[in-house]
Image (cartoon, rainbow, N blue to C red; front, side):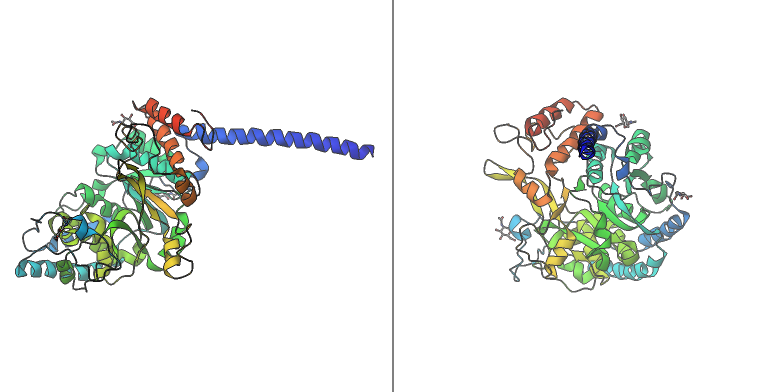
Length: 488
Ligand SMILES: *[C@@H]1O[C@H](CO)[C@@H](O)[C@H](O)[C@H]1NC(C)=O
Ligand SMILES: *[C@@H]1O[C@H](CO)[C@@H](O)[C@H](O)[C@H]1NC(C)=O
Ligand SMILES: *[C@@H]1O[C@H](CO)[C@@H](O)[C@H](O)[C@H]1NC(C)=O
């Protein structure tokens, strides 16, 4: 009896001790989550273990490949004058995607003389043969996976917010950040801040300039070269202003990537490639009701499965401004690299998975107009399961959104809080950027918008931007009574 009572009181003391320990731990952990992440030594358990900072140089095998391939790019220049669009861009009616209208006409105003079209076609078929021939020589580190991105100096603060969101998602993938040249190199960023977030800088010109006859790349051509020169076999490309809302690491291991090796996401407009492109590439012209145009804020590509199309994509981008962007977009929205990915795969008859689910537009109504702020792209596995009939498409929780691409309002801590931006309603009062909290909570499973504001606050205040105080004011007004209850 006494023994049991003593045992009971001992147990009670023990329980109390455990409870104290538990609450202390919780406090430390939550404090650490808030404060610890605000210092630049980020959660080391979230970092990739295979980040190799000493491997900053490009391997000789890749340099040899590039010198050879660059020669080929120059040789395959179409022997005719550049293609110019002298026509207003297609209007909203023309670019509207109408999946249920098989009679919808393809936008068709690009004209080429018969000789010019033949010249472009000849170079294209030469390039296709050579791409197939050279593809086995493409060098990359076998059985490696990682994220590739590009960032000029202006984009670094935006990328920091994205990288912090990536690590918050639990992703352990290493990140390679491609800079245009050494002029853009900043040792504080590249040797301190990025490595603390599992990212390292790579300088494009270190390899690009080894090929003497090649033309300097323009800004929007960097993306394909970053993918081509990255060390990974399996690449998730993310624009600097895009990040995952939940951990993306298993995308590489699951369908549709595991079968297709190339996954693209849709834009909100219809495809506007010219019919001339399909004649040049000698492939049949798909109906415009088949798929939306692509949005290249995020892309999955396997170099072992798609090396030849990667080389053709590079060709389309190298001759993008002069030939292939007009052919593939006819001056439509965001004409640039976005259409080069699936069309190169189509030209080589390679399989790819183009996510069918339309992007979820995030924003809010202001004076009767929808203000688009960002788009959310869906989980390709959910999309694949719906298309293959494994899950019902009328289940409101699927497909889940996965990536947020903040291309309309970049989350730059220096500017995002400004008047007239997405944080204010028509009367100038604070509001959430992405629309109702409930929809964010329901679809992502957590309040991703509050989380991104924490990272904007940390990034803006660490960099001592003038807007730090304004961001704090906004954060406190919007979230101090939020889920987390914290006041900063
Ligand atoms: C890092 O890269 C260097 C150069 O490529 C290589 O020699 C070294 O073995 C790598 N280290 C690790 C731990 O992988
Ligand atoms: C768009 O262009 C078509 C001609 O291709 C024209 O018929 C139509 O009226 C235009 N629509 C708008 C809204 O301007
Ligand atoms: C490098 O980045 C740091 C941190 O953002 C900044 O304070 C510094 O001015 C930058 N240096 C140069 C030379 O731009």
